Image (spheres, rainbow, N blue to C red):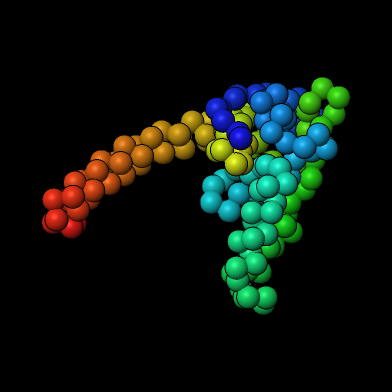
Length: 153
């Protein structure tokens, strides 16, 4: 399981030390990374994440345009990165460049996967997420309360 957020600095070769907690959740031979479908960042995880995206694609019929789009974005762009002896991975330029990842990054744990963001972009996203979560939870509570009282919403 991937938890917490870590700010890390890339070195000149775009290497980043993967947090020990994350390495423990991954197989010793590396990590899968690819451009996130939902956010402007790199998504990563282990074999379980790879299998999960495969299962999502398999729910769609072969030749379905959505399936093709998912497979191209995830599997066509995916790279398997190995850890060096210091627990680092080297982020490919092709994954970093679209998101402006050059120096500091935020590595964000999301239970079964993690994201690698340009640090300032993540700080802005985190603020937007916090507001969305506050508003969304308040709206959800109102709907739940109305449902309990038999009113619906």
